[in-house]
Image (cartoon, rainbow, N blue to C red; front, side):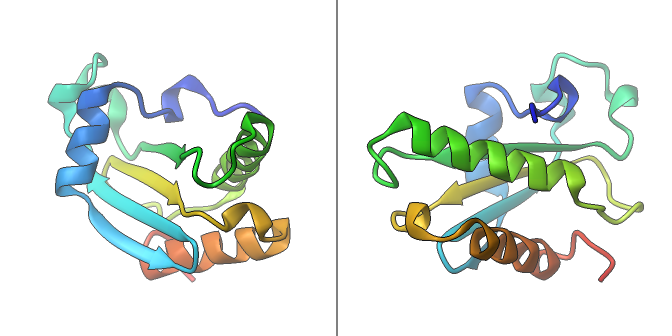
Length: 127
């Protein structure tokens, strides 16, 4: 499943902003950075962003040298993001997920369990 355009993080400035200002949460081999959306870094008008979440996944070649494996992990996490129900009272928020070396050895179920635990710790879900 492809992540829709409206949910994608794009641009070096956006990623730099999240790395500098985002709050960091870690669970196993996953690291999540959460930042309030900076509307001045986007091309869209701010009123179109009401309650919108944007998501990006960073998987370096240290995780796996094979792009096929990195892309499979990225697709799996994009799908998990789209299926997840987030709190309805969240302001426009950007999420950036980093995978650490060794994540490719995790089973899909373990990876998704770590993702679920991570977003709960970040306070993005009701449960």
